[in-house]
Length: 509
Image (cartoon, rainbow, N blue to C red; front, top):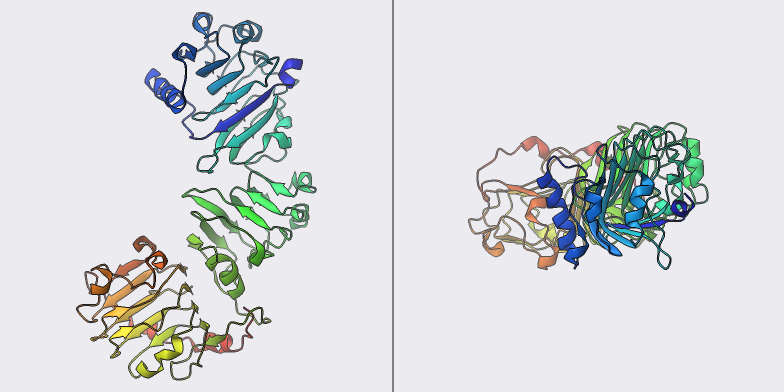
C-alpha cells in the first residue's frame, strides 16, 4: 500500500475513445488506435482482451508496455499476483479498466526505482468502476493529469460506483490539471468539489484558489453569499458552465484576468437556467485575455430582463468574436460615463442623424431620399439594431465600409437590402453579428448584377476577405439569392420608445 500511495500516474489523453467494448473487435480497434499513435516495439504490446491467470503469462517483459488492461469479474488474480508480472513496468501506454472486479486494492501498480510509474493514455483513459470490494481505507495514488497541448480533447479519469471506496482524495489539487475531465461519483465518499461539478456544499474549498485549471462548473447553488469564495480566482483554463443557480450576475469573479477556453466546437461558456440572473457583469472585461479559436457561448433561460451593456458587447463579445448557440438577452437601457472617444448616436432618421457617428443605437434605415445623407455612415463601427436599405437610387453602398459589428435582439431579419433597382454592390466588412433569434439577411429586387462583385455568392463585398463572415454565420435569402421571400413591412416601424431611451444614454464606450 505504501508503494501505491507514492505512485504517480501521469495521464495524457489526447483522443477520447469509448471506455466499454461490445465485442473483441471493438477492443482491438481501440488498441490499434493506441499502438498506431506512437512508435512501439511489437514485442511490448499486450493484446489480450482480459487480464487473467492464463493471459497474464504473455504479459510483455518490458519497461514500456502498450496495452489497454482490462480487469473485470472474470479476472482470477489477486493484486499481489498481478504485481509479480508488472514489476519491471515503468510506462503503460494505453489505458486501464478495472470494472466489476473482486480486487480490494490496486497495489499491483509498481514503483520503479529510478523513474515515476506513468500511464501515457493518448488514445484511451483510466476507468475504475463498479468494484464492490475496493475498501474504504484504500487510497488512490496521487494523479497528475494533462490533456493534449491544443486542448481539442479532454482527458477522462473516472472513479464511479465503488461503494466501499473513499475517493475523497480525488479533490486534491494534484488531480486537477489542464484539459481533464474527472468523474468521481457513487463511491463511499466522493469529492466535495469535482472538476465536473461545484456545488454550494464545497465552495469554501476554493477560498484561496487563484487558478481553476479545470474550468468552472457551478450548479445547484441557492446561497449566493458563498460565491465570495471564488473572488480570488484570476485565471480559468477550460469551459465555464453555470447552471441552476440563483446568481444575479458574474460579479463574484472580480479578480478574473485570463480565460483560456478549449479549442472545441461545443459550448465553452454556458449560462443556463439561472432565473435570477439579470446581468452579465463579468468584471475587468477589457483586460480579460481569450485566445483565438472557436468560442461558442450559450445564454439560455435566464431572467426575462437579462441584458448586456454596450460596453460588454464591444469590449468582450465583439472584441473576441464570440458566437452564440442561444442568446436570451436584450440590450440594457442605462446611462453611464464616457470610457472612450467613440461618438454614440440614437437613430431616428438619416436626415436627423449627426455626422461622425461611431456607434448607432436603433434600427438603421436608408430609404428613398436618403442618398445624400449616407456619407454620415462613413465612420460607423458598431450598430445596435437592424439594418435596412430599401427603395433607394444607390448604385453602390460603400459608406458602411467600417461597419464590422452588429448586435440585434429583435425578431425581424437582421439585415434587409431590397427594392434598390440600381444597387450593384454593398461593401461591409462584418466580423461579428450577434442576434437573439433571426439571422436572416434578405437580398431582393435589387440590380440583377448585385452578386457580380461577390462572384455570384449572395453576400457583401468586404474590404478584406479576412473580414467577411462565413456564409454559415448568416442566412442569406431572397429573390437575388434564390427563392423570393415575403417581406414584412411592419418590421420598418421604428420603436420610438426604445429610440427615446437610447437618446437619453450618455456615451460611455
